[in-house]
Length: 425
Image (cartoon, rainbow, N blue to C red; front, side, top):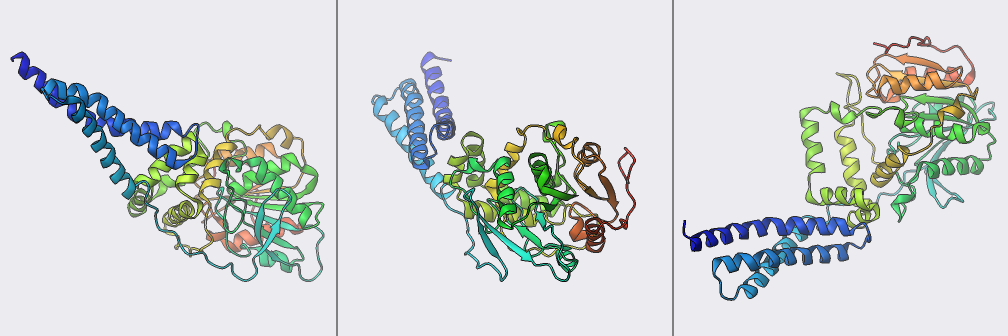
């Protein structure tokens, strides 16, 4: 092949290379600069400058090989054109806000604590009736960031038994405070909020009922403030200490049906959501600046609705969803922080606080995670609930309520203790 033809072929190949490399370099610049600033406009401008710069750098030799006389001007036009194209695409994808639901007024009965930690916490209260017990019951929802709505299953029965019952939306979830600095969503902050709640309700001791992540939080609180816990019920608890489970404590997303998986992919594959996910790994506050709380929470809530029945036993009736929004950033950041907390098990092994551990027949949480609670907490009792998945209260409400009442009232449990080291079936 003649040298001139070879040069032109090389130049022709270099142009599409520039068209691919420049946007990729712009993305790298956009994400990489997030390590030093959360200002999205600055990230966008720098990203476009990188696109233009790479276009010019690759365009100059390409046009030279092609024999273009004004190769410098052509390279500048190429860089500007690539930057304009990327800007046009980004403005309709990454920087185009998604749907945000209109704010909804809280239902009757929702109140707020203004805690000294700085958190404004939404809660509901079922006051004791009859002969009042001295120790209140506080329900801790799962997630992190997945609140309930209203008084939880079993709460009304416990109130009728004389217990003051409280359930609250944890920081960053439901109707409670969203932080402007999302790195503040830590396990320690959740523990501090819970202790401030104890003070707000005037309790020296509390009875904690923790569902899923709420069980992990209850264990963290128990390790930090053992003198303030009278009893604790762990319902399908998440990991006691996550580093003890190198492969995690279980994944509900692996149970999605094809239609649920399709919806999951739709919700997580948009360029805007993917950009926020990239930024989340570099600078969570940059992700937060791009994808604000209301939009992120709405998307996360939709994800929860897509998978709401995946954690039940096969053939279980679908659950009725509620509208109390989940919290995206508290979920992501608290989950990461939970991987780095000190091991609470040495402290818990020295305690003798009565503990009930409930595990459902179809729970996706790994058996090793549940077993760790029974092995760590002296004198704890584990029960196995047939016909229930991860949400025992939703799948078997009568059995769940009966177990809670018997445990808190000091009666004989309606189900036998499970003592085998082998996973129940």
